[in-house]
Amino acid sequence: MKKKDAESELEFLDTSDEAKAAGLRRIKRRHYSCPQEMLPSEERVNIEVSLDREVANFVQNDPHRINQILENAMRNVKVARTLLDDTEFIDGIKKKLAA
Image 1: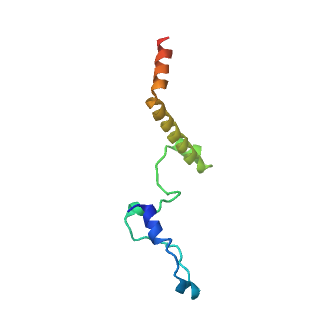
Image 2 (image 1 turned 30 degrees about the horizontal axis):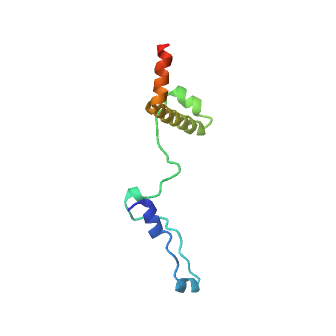
Image 3 (image 1 turned 45 degrees about the vertical axis):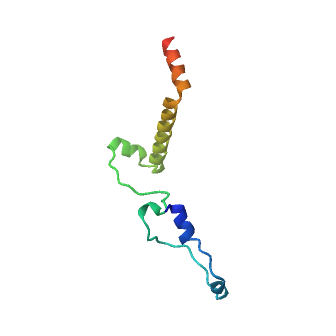
């Protein structure tokens, strides 16, 4: 069962007419009793890393800078992989190198 299916079954159950008449309503679950892969993912996670002093000094005053740097690195890796899979790009590089 996927997370999406579990959420539809567990969190979005309709309140019965009888319960509505009594002024009750269903609320979203705050915990799950299901396998880890079905749990909702967190937007941010806390991790502990060891940085060189120079790097720590660079990012010390702006904690979001680390996240920006890592996101840019991830994008660059994705672009590089895409370009390496692009045969037209590779052929163009070969022609430029041959010239």
